Image (cartoon, rainbow, N blue to C red; front, side, top):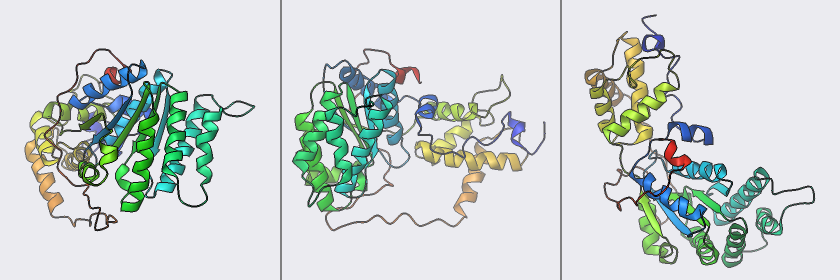
Length: 347
């Protein structure tokens, strides 16, 4: 094999260059189940069976896998013939509502609900919100429309990513009141799943207790264990693997994965960034294996590089939160798993 290429490792290229794999196909391939997924799977099954309704918040730092969990829920819903609306929350309440309305329209078309003669009335009621409203947004009317649409489409999921994008206290107040109305309207068979930073949820707990009191479950994403980190890396490598009968994490040995995971604080996205650097170092050094010593050299080299300034979040005196918090080590014990699902088989 060529001495200075990825072929040395039985790879066609560097699999860690695409740090985020958040389309529906990739999330089911690269996902690794953690304790949080056991709880989420049980909640999803109860909603899909119309046994219960749920409002769930998934928390974690940037790169912990919040978006991936929402996408997994979307994939599970679509695989089971349920209605799923996924939306990235915008920085203002009115824009956030428009984004949700547009996502409803896309989901309805994808589900084949929009026919030649038009869409059902419940779809039209929500998609009309995409055109905006005159004057201030009416949270009660907006939330009622969204909630009734979700009821009409049961089983149905509303998946809201990055709620922390709402950083202005006034905008937060309007949108959370909209979600409060959604919570008051929805029936068994509806799931509202929200992703945000843990520190943002902490601020909401103090300042928006009306919404937080309606949450059925808060699920923190914990740091990867070394075994989970090995599986994550193995799945990434498999996507570029051309030589069979190699160790799943080759060229990384067990000590290398441990060093990478410790340095990444168990954060999947950070793990990929560090593995990327270590793999490139191994290629340049013509090494046949990447061990802990090579990883430490790679990490030391990173420390000598200029560090980019962190993103400047818009803050008000009332709202302040961080995307760099360490992964939480506390959480509720996972609920008992009662059924198998697409989510479970993705492990």
